[in-house]
Length: 207
Image (tube, rainbow, N blue to C red):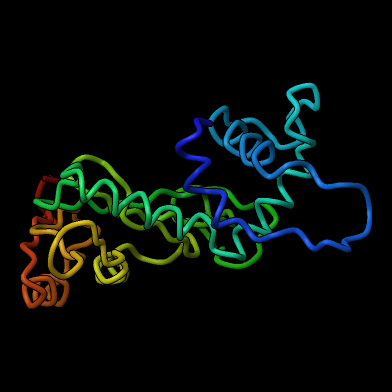
């Protein structure tokens, strides 16, 4: 992790209680590096080697949960979007929506029977990104939630992005999606928001 990213991240991290019991906690920067290492390498938390100096996988996992509750990554993401917008690096001419299934063997919140794996328990990640593939918004639902019901949640969930004179921007010019997002109410509501729907119709090839 480079110094610039740490400079943005550090002020967002909640301070550690001064009188917390137990040994001195692993340094926040090292823990964040460990979290990024696990996510980038796609390994199990248990396989994070102590020799790397990031603390144990359990330590990083707990710190991740603590920071998630403090909305650290949500706030950092908003800061990065603002910087990208100021540098003309966001493509607002179109936004793309899609979703993917993940297995959730232990169940829990936002899980349900999948429609692609024989009814196994799973979740669904929903994503909207700009024309360059930069993520605007990600959220999770049960696997049996239909994509079409989330179209407007996608669009309305884009945070207001500052970085330029005038009002912050939060609407793309067009929304691209496959036929899973096709419905007359969605087309109507997108147009009402001055967004062009570019969505495949049911029974036609995907765009």
